[in-house]
Length: 295
Image (cartoon, rainbow, N blue to C red):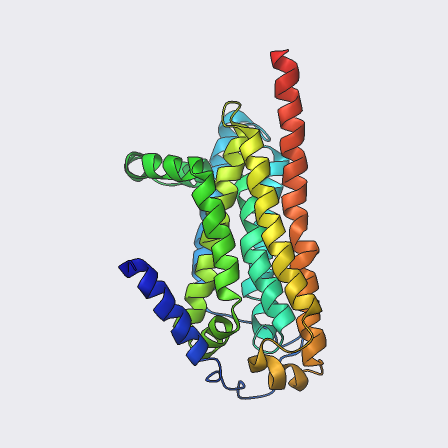
């Protein structure tokens, strides 16, 4: 057995062993009016990203004209992506995720399946680079262009990481361990977002580059969506509670724990698949157009 495999097994064992450690949060449960998570770990990166994007977009549209280079629709998609991140991390999902598995799953699926394609649809890399001073932009381009391009072409590894991230963090022990440790919880959120950005960047490349191979993108989307649907079905039809850490927490906000788990499964199974279906249909249209032009 390799060292990396052994480390993964030890991590899973450690997560399972900590399944009963996460205590019920102190204080009254949140309401919609109080469900704010104002953490600098979230707000600062979001503010910097949005500010750089707006600065880069303003410079581009002043030089080329409004809607050129980056269309209004693409800019709107980026704004929607930022909004979904705010919903997931600032209000209200992050606060309710400590009490309801359904809110936690909705938060995870937002970070993995919804926010990344919206953000990437806005072409953020070029706009953020144009917002920086020229020296910084040139250095970033020289140092990051090759590795980012390599990652964007590695669709199969991106799909594997995408699915593995979803399965690993939804193991009951891993979920409980994340609820018990703030640093691990942040790492979980970061891993969902990073895995989502990597996968969707690889898919977007298949959509935008004529020679990138749209068929491979379709296969990856279907494979990931099937895994998500299977895990969602497991949660929906499980006859017993799989996440005992949420038993008392769900009751505090008036939810039946088993129904909360079923709702979590439905959220993963049905709405979370919509971005994959939409982009998959987009890939089909792009593939048909390319075939028509070649013919």
